[in-house]
Length: 543
Ligand code: VG1
Ligand code: CO
Image (cartoon, rainbow, N blue to C red; front, top):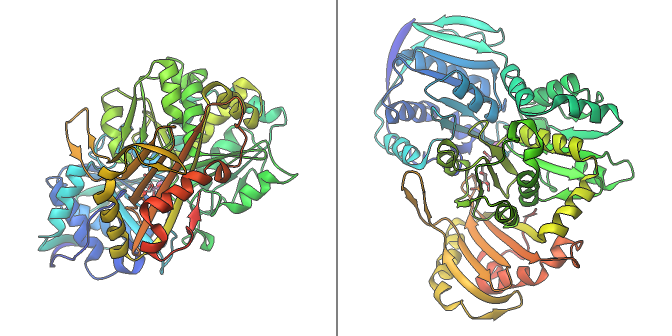
C-alpha cells in the first residue's frame, strides 16, 4: 500500500450551505472534486493525524464509492481510526450519537438530505464536530477558505475495505471499525422513552404507518417500531433504502409524501402516521384526518415532553429557527422557559444545547431534536409523539384541539419558488431590503406593519454574529411574513416565503390554513412583487 500525493488546484464553488456541500452527483464524481473538499476539511481542522472519525451516509448513489475514497484519504493523512456504519450507512442522528458516545474528533456524513438521489441528482458531504453537531459557521468558513488554496491531497493506493462485515480491519496504519448502524441508536431511544407504554399502545390496537421514503430510516424504523415496539409488520412503508430513493424526493411534507397524506385523509386512516427524510433527521407527523405542521409539532412536544422518561425533569429552554412559527413561544411563556430564535440550520442550535440553555429545538421544515444528540432527529420526534400519545390516550386531533384551545393557533405555511434565476431572486430581495424602512405603519390586507427588518443573530454563547438571515415583516395583529433564499438547493435559487397568522380562539381554530392565511399570502405578493420579479404566478411547493 502506497501513499500518493496528488497535485490538484482549487475548484470553484465549494462553499458549504445550510447543511454541508451539495452539488449534482456528477459534479462530486468529477476529477479531484470530492478529494479537494475532504482535504480542505482535514486542513481546516488542523489535520487528521492521530484522530478518530465517524463515517456514514444515507445510502444514495455514490455513497459507497465516496466512503472508500474518504477512508483512503484519512489513512494517508495518518488518522488513527474511522468508525463506519455497515455498508457505509448511518442516519445523520445516528452518526451524531456515535461521534458523541465514542468521543471521536468528529465525523463525515454523506448526504444531500431531502434532495433527490441518483447519478443525475444530488450528493452532499457534511462535517460534524466533536460535539456531534454540524460544523459551526467559523469552521465551514475555514473549510471554504482551504478549498480556495488546496494544492494537493494525500491518498492511499489500496483495495476497497469490505464494509459489509462488522468488525475491525487495518487500512495501512489506520484501523477501520465497521459497526451496526442501528444498534447504538436504538438503545439510546430505549433509554429516553417508555417502550413498555408504547408497546402497550400498539397492543391495544393503535395503528400506525411510517413512510421511510426509500431512504436511510427504513432499517432504523423497522428495528425500533416493528421489532422492539411490536407495531404490526407492514407499519413501515418503503423501508428498504435505494440509491435513488425510488425515484422520489425523500422530503417528508404533504407534497412529496402525498400517498401517506392521502392515506390519513381516507377512511382507511391509521391512528398515527409519520415520515422521515433522506438522512433521517426530519419528520412529518400526521393523525387521522390531520396534518400537524412542524411548528405546531414543536409546540406540542415542548408542552408535553415532561410526560416521558427522558425529559421528566423538565426542559432547560427551547429554541426555534427564526422562520418557524411562534407557537412554541407561547408554550415557553406559559412554562416560564426561555425561547431562543436562531437562523435557519441546525448548526446554530449546537452552542445552546452544549451550554445547557435549551433542551428542545425545532424548525418549520420538520426538523425537531433535543440535547440527546446534536442533530435534528426524525425517529426520535416520532417516538416522543408516540410516548406522549401513550400517556395521554387520545387521538392526535384531540390533542391538537386541546393545545390550540389553550394557546391559540398559529396558522402557518411555506411557499417555495424553486430553481428561480439567481440574479432575479437576489434583485427581488435587494429591492425589498431597500424598502424595509418605509413599511412600518403601512396598512395591507394582512394588517398594519409593526416591524420590518433583516434578521441577524448574535450567538449568546460564543458572541459570534450571523447576518442577512432573512427579511421579516411583522404585523400588529401577530401575522408575519419572512422571505429568504434556500441554502440547500443545487439549481438556481429557491425562494422561500414563510407565512403566519395567529388566531387566539376559542373561535376560528379549525380553518383551512390557506384560507386563514389568504390575506397574508396576498400581502406577501403585494409587498415583494414576487411574480413580477421571478416570473412565477404560483409557488412550486406549498407546505
Ligand atoms: C433547509 C431547511 C432548514 C434545514 C436544512 C437542512 O434549508 O429550510 O430548516 O435545516 O434544509 O435540513 P434551506 O437553506 O434550504 O432553507 V436537511 O434535513 O436538508 O439536512
Ligand atoms: Co435531512
